[in-house]
Image 1 (cartoon, one colour):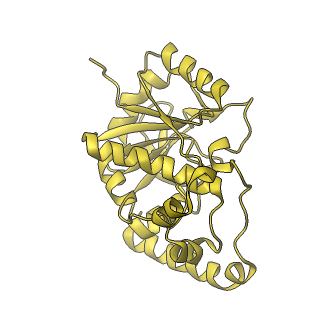
Image 2 (image 1 turned 120 degrees about the vertical axis):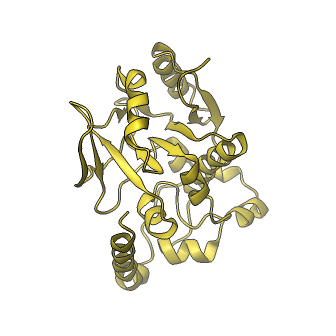
Amino acid sequence: MNAHPPIYVINMAQDVERMVSMAQQLDAQGLRYERVDAIVGRQLSPQQRRASLSKFWYYFFMGRVPSDGELGCTLSHRLIWKMMLERGQQWAVIFEDDALLSPTFASQLAMFEKATTAYDVVHFFSLNQPSIIKDNYFDQEFRLMAYAGANTTATAYGLRMAGAKKLLKYKPVIFTNDKWVMARALLGVKCIAIIPFPVAMHVSHSVHSTIGDEGSTKRQGALLWRITLLPILRLVRTVVLKIRGI
C-alpha cells in the first residue's frame, strides 16, 4: 500500500528528457506517480477553445486573451483537479516536469501535509519569496509563510479536495492556473508556502515551462487596462484578501 498521497506530473509528450528526470527523482525516493499528458494549446480547435475559455472575463482580469501555451497549461492543471474530485482524493501533489525535489522530500511529505491542514494549496516552490509569516517554525527547519502579493509558477504544489472544488468553481477559464492571487481573492482559495522551498526548478531547464510557453510567449495586458483597471483590481483584491484573512 502506498503511504504517500497521489502524485501527478504534467508533461508534454515531446519533453522526454524532462520526464526522465522527474521519473528518476521520484523513483529514487520511492514515490509512485502518474504522468498526465499536457494539453497542447495550439492543438485545440476553435470550438474547444471557446468552450474552455471565458474570453470576456479573462480579458477583464488579465487585460488580454491567453496565449495557446497559457490556455493549454491551465487546462492541464484543471484536468488534474477534476481527476482528484472524480477519484475522491483528499490531498494530492502536483508537479510540472521542470521540478527538482530535495533529497528528503518524500520523508518530509507527511509532515508538510499535517502542518498545512488549514490550507487549500501548499506551495513547494515559487519564483517569488513569500513575505508574511503566518506561523512559527513547525519544524526545526521549516515554517509556513504567505504571499503579500502575487506568487508565480505552478511548478510544485499540494492541493486538497476543498481547494480543487474552489478552483473549479467556474467551468470556463477566467485566469491562468498560476495566478494564485486571483484564486485567493476571487475564489477564496487559502494558500500557504513551505519555507525554505523543498522543491526548486531544474537548473538545466528554462525558468519558463515549455507547457505554458509553447506556441507563444506571455504578453503584458493592454495598455489601457494596465493604466486604469489593473490598479483598481489590485485595490479590490487587497481589500477582499484582508476581509477574508486569506
